Length: 371
Ligand code: SF4
Ligand code: FES
Image (cartoon, rainbow, N blue to C red):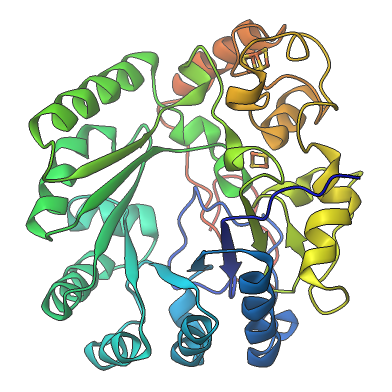
């Protein structure tokens, strides 16, 4: 058997704990409890194994990774293993002192999330009063230290109109890059589709704003863009292709091909405590299930874009068709594409739909519209 090339990036979900409660959180609806989280030594071993396997970039994420008290030690160990370290954070839980320690530890880059461009929007979406003010303070400390910064925005029906201001804020923060990601419907976001789905007109306007800003800010600010795929013609290349460029480790040690892979019921996932990472990457059933193109059926099988988008997102195919090996319905060649777009319009028409906020790990999952 020919071995797959090594992954480039690893996302370490250090914890599912988080002070915010964003209703589009990509964490699973059933969150990992704190007492199931990997300890520091196991994370460090995972980082060392990742570097030996060929991983170059380590994304430290959550939940909120600052909820881990040993975050600085983990960064130190990752840098010692030779990994480029990127912290993906809401900023809540980071003090000036902690940021200085992370700088001392060698942290290479920070991605700061933005839930809205003013306190009213940001605090409502994050479910955390005072969060916006706190985040702006953290952004100022990040700039003082001089960390390279990316601003991460998740856009949806309620805040898409704030995109021009979000781009201004990125410039005011001296960010090098802004990620403009229209909400992708996995995890908590899938439960909140009625409340978050953008209209077709909003999706088109977002593309227009991004195109205009990219031209105007060339050389000053890089704009990465994830469009609203329910309204698109072709799907996104999810995870760069399953088992192709990246992997995730969940807080309890399960090694996943993507953040929503646990929704695919026939897959089982090895844990980093039980098997070497290289063996999981190369030989596990879960990573080989949708690797490459051999698993594809029509229309992907004979499509000339099959190595461009790898058939789109397996988790979205499962969620919308019941079959994880189906063509992602975001593709116009999928027999489910028309019904997906009709659904998008139906969801977008639910203007008064209530938000279901993400809850703390270990708590019962609330019914729709409850907190
Ligand atoms: Fe991509 Fe499959 Fe659609 Fe072709 S048919 S564009 S491979 S999702
Ligand atoms: Fe799992 Fe796209 S989120 S393949």
